[in-house]
Image 1: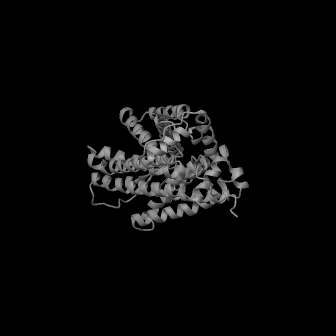
Image 2: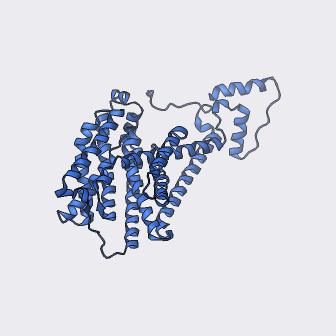
Image 3: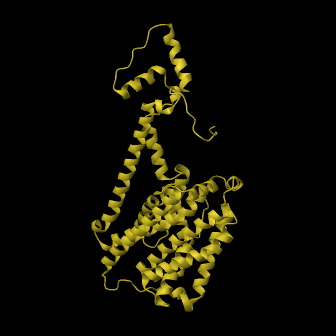
Length: 393
């Protein structure tokens, strides 16, 4: 005897397989959507990879490196913010830890640059376990305050511990490719950041389609209900926080190797965490490419304001206005807003319950390539659609 969860054998008139036009149309629409997404991803990858060849000067290329660094950090932030809904302003501190960890392993321990990068990311991931164990026990505004406190504490530590970190004098990081000229140096790191971004996007995409990702989304929607239904909410949050910290540290460490100079004031800044939140919100926190789109907009905007207005604080005012506009008019982000707009332009999908028997007969005949049978003109003709509609409902 079949259970309630197993599919039952339905009469031919009630099975969805007997409605080929509707199913075929839906399948065809999904196929078209899938092809459009694949083409869009390929175009995006081609645009990213061809940028160094199209950049007119080294400054534009370095700006591309900065934007990709923002995209890596914002995508890393989206592991926590996008899946669980926890807003962290402390990810700038994790990037700073990755940068200083890489620099210290190179300068003090003598490790090769990229070995130091990986080791520093693993150390930051290990350190994220006790940090997450303490911080993830609170929610909402309390979690935001704890993340801000993490940034301020690390700023004081790295400023005061001058014998190790250089303090306010900064810390010089040896270049991993000393023989390369500056433009070639930018070009190599541009592709390294692009590879790291692709790895982060692949990891986010894999989690999004896993059972683990389903549990994280349940936490985002209603953590208490998810826990009541058996989801190990705290363990899930801690694991994704550690994954996010590892990618953030990789981004921070790669930035240290590229830029070559670290200062605690900039590495442990609340502004960095605020930018990451703004980028993810602007693009769409629940979308794979949302943080990337946000990084493009905010990163280019910041570079523009710095070039046009120098060291003024006007770029901060513009960033605040942009955040207000996003919250007011596009609370879900740019990509969801575009998807919603495109959805309105598509023809409305009719339910099988709204299709008459005559329309079903025409659709089946069209699918089979035979002319539809003419509707009998008698008293029964008026009642046949009704009986068929009941049968298909």
